[in-house]
Image (cartoon, rainbow, N blue to C red):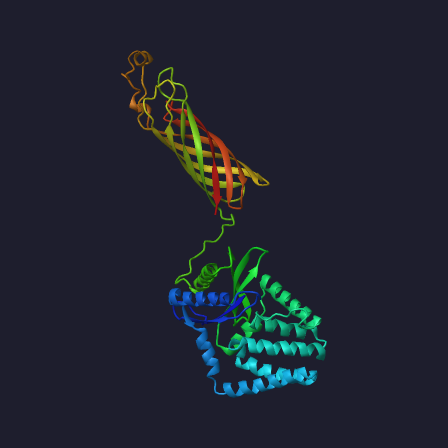
Length: 458
């Protein structure tokens, strides 16, 4: 089954001017109950009337038929065309094949120019059938005969040529035409015979072509192909699988396809800016890594063993070359309680770095080593002292003096390896160690750490 939709629109924003749409019933697949054709037509028209959101204005099929018949010369030309058709059929039955072909061709030309196939499809398809039968004896142009049968099927799919009632070669051509129509439809290139004629008779911007096809022996799909008359080609296809061929399933599917079509006509008031994809060629980089640190020297009693600090380090770099870069970074750490309970509560540490990084690349891998000046800031930390008091009472009666903590300045060495996932993103892993020189004889010293994270290059 085929349903043709003609859309009248201007190439302007949908918010500025309405498009008009005309829905024309037509058919493709024979054997369908005739009411299915009208189910799709009615559902599509109802959707436009009720849910077009002021984007589309509906011109009903009845109005389209009336406009064709209201033309000044319609009545006279129809009678003239019918005269040619009647004479052509009579001559065919009298075996005057040449005369039949000429008169049928004249009558069908009038039918085509008047759009009579949209008003009386059975009358036009009957005339086309006699023309095809006449041409079988009057020409050897196979393509011409196939086109006549295709037009006949598209205008009225209820027509069928059964073996025994029609010549064998006519039945063969008819079946070939039907097969070609289905192939072109499945391949996304429906025939333009009917949509082209609808375009000639109206002032449309879009023609939408509904069809129902068998996908296998038990299932079907309903298709909506959009024909752009300014481009003279089908531009879009929408498709829905049908669980069954019922009035309800066809009604719902036709409404959903029309909804998709209407939504495509609705243009946003502002087109969002799409960020450009980074090519990874900027000199600027940022990185973020998780890190684990321990200080080999830390003030406290003899049973204070090195304990861990977990946190994150964020850095910003500027690459003068692929091998040399300047970098700054900040690291925030939270302590992890030591197992002997010397550190009474967790505390935070802030470390900052500024320096340079030098390295070399090997395929997607890069190996580098950085040298930095580090400034670290420690809060006053509750560290129990001495050991025996803590062990006997469980109460901390003494702490390390606060002047053991504060700001420290030193040198940092950081080896790293990175692997490029994309042009912009790389995995990084590394280690680093520092030595604080200020204050002299620093009570906190020798931090060593490992890190793992990502680097992004703009």
